[in-house]
Structure formats: structure tokens, C-alpha cells
Length: 345
Image (tube, rainbow, N blue to C red):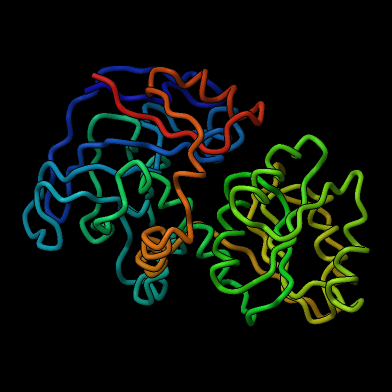
């Protein structure tokens, strides 16, 4: 089968090559891939900022397809089912995180597209317990972004807020747009920020997805806007989806005393400077959000089936796995919002 593979450690070196077609083992499901979503972490992997040491690995962890084979002991899905899968492929199964369903925190976890061959291929093996059957009204094309949407759902639920709360979403990239949709589904009023270069995406956020307030922080006074919306108290919650240090500082500045800050985006550097006096003096709750858990997937698929998360509006381009360079430049230029790929061969 044809697969897009990271051939060497470091940046670049992605090639479409022939790989053996996998065979489903015990507790595994072989899925014929129909669509693959491109994640920001795929870009970071290509650029050498993430998963640097992987070599010989098939890339991709956002996908949907049709069950082609089930291994011994698999009873939750059958051949022909339309499915998507969590990224978790292997866990220890006995640590406190596994026992509570927090597989993303298991120290032995191996994920699809990062430690285990991923979805940019004709077939992929998935852990049966990670596989979810799609609602009837959700297509495999739409479901190819379920993993990204589940990450957004996971992030949003790291904070608690009542309907009507003023919620900052910093960054109008794909994850920011998904976070905004989940926030609005839970009754939050979104203020989304970006830079001047992000204006096309900010406009999409307002016109396509109904974000209430969009702000170009390089031209507009976001502090004054938040002040007007909150009688001067500050925003209730902030989700930083940029991974940019100035954005982090801005978010903490705009929060009310006792506000909640969730770091969603990955920073380019592992260590960044944080103003802890601000956290202390304002009694902020600061939490990180990593990936997604098994309990995030069914609620996410429900939101997608209800079109409260609108995958069709997210996906702007479709290419084959042999057109990675085209996809990369479309995303880096900001021309594309979300790209899905299809297998070849």
C-alpha cells in the first residue's frame, strides 16, 4: 500500500513509499482510510519541532474510514462500519490514569501517527476500544476532523462557565475555530482575537461560525471591548490556541480576578516566562490541555451530528497524500482553514 512516511529523523524527509498492508491482531481493527485531516502537530513534525526522532513512521492521526477487518476478540465494530478512531493505540492498562480513562496521561501510551504508524495510507490499524462508529448523518469526510474537534471539546471542558459568560479564544486557527464552536454550543459568548494577518480567518469566524466579537489586537483595543462587555471586571475564561508568549500574557491580562486560563496551543520552546505575580494577585486558575480522552469522543460526534460543530465549513481544501507540499504551503500561507487528504493507490 502507498503511505506518506517520515523517512529520517529531524525536519523534512517525507516521502510516499510502498509499505506492507497491515493485518489486524487481537483487539485490533483494520480500517480502510477514506479521509485524513492535517493537524498543526503534523506541520511541527515536518518542520522538525515535534516528534523529531521518529523515522520510518507513517504520519497522520486525524482520519475516518471503513472497517476492513477485525481481529480476534473484537465485538464493538464489524466489517463495513463507518468509523473514526482515537489516537491512543497502546496503553499500560493498569496505571491510575488508564483506570480513570485518562489515557492521554499514561506514561506508556503510544499514539497513532506519533509512535505508531498513522493514517496517511490506504489502511491503518487501530485499537478496537478506541474506535467509534459514526452517526448516520456524519460522513467520513466530516468525521476526518473528529480528533481535532475532540481536542477542542477536551480543552473547553478544562474550565467551567455558565451560559452568557464572556470567553476569550485567542487565535483563529483550526483549533481556535473549533474551540469557539464548542464554547458557543455551551452558551458562552466568544471574543476571538488575532493579528492583522489573521483578518481573513477572523472574518470567517464571524461570518461562517457566528463568533460574536472578533478583534485585530494590532489595531483594535481588545481591553476596552472586554471591559465594556464585563462592566470592567474582565473575561471569565481564556483559551489560548496560539502557543505564542505575547498571547498568553494578553489572555491573563484580560481575565477577571478568579478567572480561568487554559493553555491549548503548544509553545515553540518548552520553557517560557510566565508572570506568576499576576496569577497570584488575580487568583487565576491556570491549566493545560493535552490531546483528548475516550470520554470526549461521543459528545464531540453528537455536536458534529447536530452541526454545532460544522465540519463542512472547516474544510476548505482536499488533496492526495502525494500532494503534501501543496497542502503545507496552503496552510502556512493561511489560505486554507482545514485540509483533508485522501489516500492514493
